[in-house]
Length: 120
Image (cartoon, rainbow, N blue to C red; front, side, top):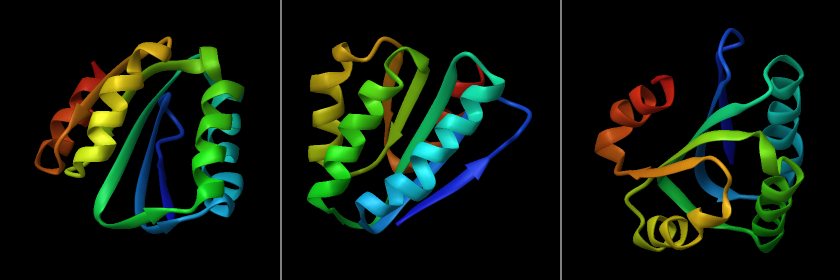
């Protein structure tokens, strides 16, 4: 499941991932939110919070994640990934060089720090 928190007056989108994340979540929540935000702002900042309630990604969700990254390749200004799941944090660190914007990782206890970083 992906929950969206959207401040319509800023270029920041906040997504909270929990339980099982599906391709439908990307197609109905994440991708439309990004498209709508890009109608108002040329670059966006995103917070991905992989919550403690997160269980797994469906394979289709992983494909849609990669598709979104490519579809909006030059739209990323900053991406903050918040999680205590080691394989997610390590994956972000390994592949962050492929993203044109700034990418940082934070633990769940640092979510406010991640939000501050995105606002700065």
